[in-house]
Image (cartoon, one colour):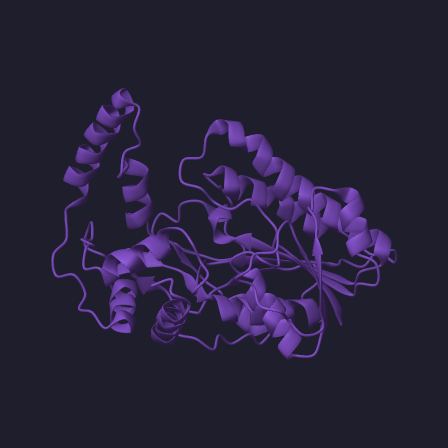
Amino acid sequence: MNVLVTGATGAIGPRVVQALSDTGHTIRALSVDCPQSVPTWANTNSIIGDVTDPAVVCDAMRGIDAVIHLAALLHMVNPDSSLKGEYERINVGGTANILDAAMKAGVRRVVFFSTIAVYGLSNGKVLDEESPTSPDTIYGQTKLAAEQIVLNARSSDGQLIGTVLRLGAVYGSRIKGNYERLMHSLDRGRFVPIGNGTNRRTLVYDKDVARAAILAAQHPDAAGQIYNVSDGKFHTLNEMVSAMCGALGRKPPRLSLPVAPMRAAACILEGSTKLLGWSSPITRTMIDKYTEDIAVSSERIQTELAFLPHYDLQAGWKETVREMRESGAL
């Protein structure tokens, strides 16, 4: 296949491009920049451009069989409300450009990377693709809006061309944000858990995400479908921290802090630092995010597309640590 990958130089993009290259596909990689840390791939033509520019997208789409659309403005903790327009411009408008150009170019499949954040709070339930969506972040809201654009797209003969992959929390050596900070804290022995650690997490290793994307781009039954993507299990926070510590060669933290007093302290700290014009190092939102319970089933993609993850929690974090140390990131 000739495959267009948007967001090819982001956190997950290089894994997708590498997997496509390894399996003999021809890739056109579209990104807004070209970081030095990204390798040179075989069978790949790299283009610098923005998915919000219709002309760039139209040019990039010529001769393409399938698109894997990763480019997005990613989740931020407590983003300023002024960023809502930027989220909509990139996540919704950029996706509309991709689907419009894909339909005009006769592309047969567009795989869209969405997120389990579109479900919102799980309230202790196990969520699946039939569960109601109620995203509580701008990121999740714009991803859900973009999903509808993808799922409504049709070819000239009326066939659905879009597939939505709702990813669990993706981890790997290139991932930034909360998991990177947690990894460094555990490695330095400076992490103290909050709560009892029994809240659940839904994760997936970045290499398995790449495999799921290629499968969705090729499988005839994937068109018009939504699939949750995870490693197939739910992991308590304690299990995740234990796997990370095992990969680091460190013992898991033995002590933990109670949630209610920590939220109260964070509230006071937020108020005090705001008066001084500073940012609080810990917030109630951070604590809520850390202690939230999110269990999302990925049974459908395993049953319908025969997707089987290659990495469990231990193998994924072990490889993540090895690659981070090799690159000097840890």
